[in-house]
Length: 207
Image (tube, rainbow, N blue to C red):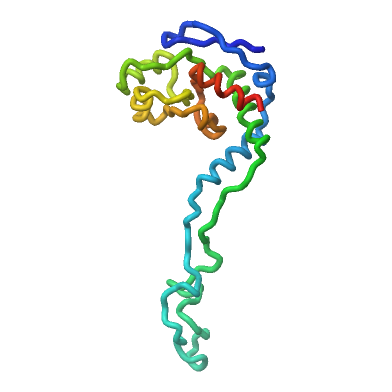
């Protein structure tokens, strides 16, 4: 078992948390991480883009001018894709971009990225994160004291004061351990775990 230090809000060591060696020693797997991020972003796409083909453009169907004798190329419809305001050929239509990815791949990616963050000293574990108020200025000052500019904060149940204090900070994001994903961990150089959230996350990381 690997023991990691837990800190208080003054950054003093106040305890430990144990993690299985199989989690901490997981080698980094860039392909699994990349596939998981691509799947996450693909699932978030709306896919609501749509263009009209020549059968959907609102125009008269009459022939524009006689077939022969004008000196112009023959033309049968104003809806033709080669004419201005005509239909679009093979344009985008509403579609679902999401795709399936094996559960084992997603689990491997999360575990590998967490282990890599530990190796690069990008993980901070707090005993608790109960703020005395919901002032963004005070919370920003606290983060500055820790030397943290951009961070993902993982908690068990997001406290109201923490959510309110962090929501106006574009470089700070608060999530529950249930919502933690590879994409969010990749976005932020520092990941701050509350001890109770990491304890609950250990089961996911062990699969």
